[in-house]
Length: 397
Length: 123
Picture (cartoon, chains in turn orange, cyan):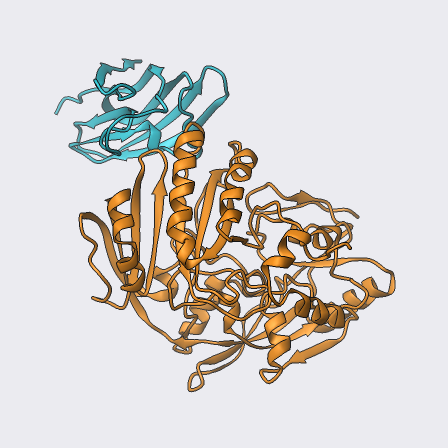
């Protein structure tokens, strides 16, 4: 029987033939084998926070909500193996009990670890990589319904698996590189836009985590700094708005409970292009979009990595995100800004709004074809390749 | 202490210019809602925004502490939805404690800036 599914923001809604919630990996393997044998497609969904089409599926949608928790933890090695359906918020608390922590978080912690890793979700910090880089090894169900383990020695396969959008297989258990539990101090400041831009280099290099919100209706900025307690820089010509301390998993994600829905588009740019791109976005929003756009623009930093499809692949990165209330027009706004991102060498966030197809995306990723070979080996019949995923990943000759 | 103010107010003159002159945010064109709570208890204020050309949006939620005033730029309200600029609107304001409401505008479309202030209609 068809059941409806919708994402958090409400802009992705569809009715798959089935929504399945397997209780263990045996049941999951059976579902994939069945789909494979009958020529059907199957997609795994995390917490539904993404606003892209990557989970859209007419056939079988699989939720891992019964596969959660910590399988094992090793404090000395700073590693843990966790179930892929665990939310980041739950993992934060559970890892704390083992004196372990994820090195970073994004603004929300409602996603599942499988979804966050699989889409290259990230926080901010010039020396901090996206969450996929925690993945040391993974056990997954491949496209033929076999349970497979990718070990830490299979370096090339892991480079494909880290940001794989659920197309190599459905992650079951993930071994993560973690850090000891840490506490931080969060400070936030109000500052004029030009004053913030003048200090951008110092803010980026001088703080563990730095980002800013730019407010189009006021043309001013909120700086957000997260550092070891008493660490980091003190911005000039800024008014301190708040300061508090606490453990990373409690202090870094600040918007998990946001009550109102919004749509989001984000591009990852070469770090050196970040300031110029932001100035171009600011100018365009002030000139064309202030009338209906009151939501902020978010500027973050991210360290380079080597995952095949990571938006930060091979380059230190600045990300810029647009937000808009889901009840107000957003398509026209995002579409108008997207060419600015692309002109500055941007790669879209896989889990947010963009209009790129495979032919646009392939040239952005030096290891695109390596990823495709690994994907083909793990899912030769294309069980995980819905029409939306084919548009995203298959380049037609 | 005798309560000052009323629990129900309305504003009918909303319209926020999209353009501004001069340094922002000080000189951003804006409408401002000013709520004085002269009483001894927190005032929970709920605002419905009524557009001339769109539906009603709300509630926008504010709390005004006892013996305090809040002056909120209408431009800055984004929950549940950013207020549209250059759209005619009004406000229906309800509070669980008596408050005094005034409403102002700073219009900096020209360099010769102008501002105005009016007391809202109390119901």
